[in-house]
Amino acid sequence: MSTRIKSAAVALVIAIVLLILHDTFVFNIALGFITAMAIWEIFRATKFDKHFKVCVACYAFVGLDALMPALHAHGWMTFFNSQLYYLLFIVAVCILYLSDHKNFTYTDFFVMIGVTSLVNYCMHPLIDMSRRGGGVFLLVITLCGAWLADSGAYFAGTFLGKTKLCPEISPKKTVEGLIGGVISNGVIMLIVSLVYRYLCKGLPVRFGWIFVAGMMCALIGLVGDLTASIIKRQTGIKDYGNIMPGHGGVMDRFDSVLLVAPFMFYLYTQGMIIG
Image 1 (cartoon, rainbow, N blue to C red):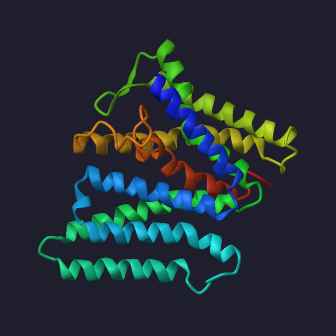
Image 2: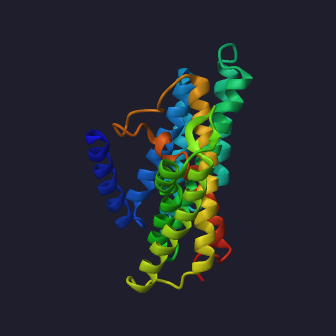
């Protein structure tokens, strides 16, 4: 428990610093690193890390995709857009496939491109949010929506839990815990929004939609959590990594964020969060 608390404290300090620097290159570099780490953990768990050169191409792509928006925001290298460097990434993997086709199979080819594209797609909205109006608020409620449902579910499940939700995947989760997590997540996101609006004099917030979004985030985040858990069970690992002692790896912490982030960014673009 002591190790978990210390790791959480360090992570909280880092998160606060990154939120302060949300509109700088530092945030983009940090998100690129986190995304690359998540992909590396999946490759290691599924034994695809043996294809070292392809792994490097995957990490280089997500690093570029994280950094380029910061350059484009200053009007730099606008010709080098996502369509171009994604194409270059695919071409690079194709060349590596052709050069090592006896060891690098078509399954490896499609899985490594798919994992890289999927994780990057899910994480990139955090970068998009960082430079929008109310960027810090968007990032905070997105992370709250992904992470805090577990706390509500834990307490509800501890005191009221009787009906197992999915015992083969996650034996400790209960239906009562899920309901508690869904409701508490909506309430917590509503409270965070109220604080932002009235104490920080922030932009106008759509409180009704925030409450609904909070409940939806709990459900969507659970899907990401359970999906990551199945992968761990099928690959025979307990945690994806140990970058946060007592908490696991990046994927262990961001499995819920992967689905919540694009969902929240979609709501924002539709004027359902701030407007």
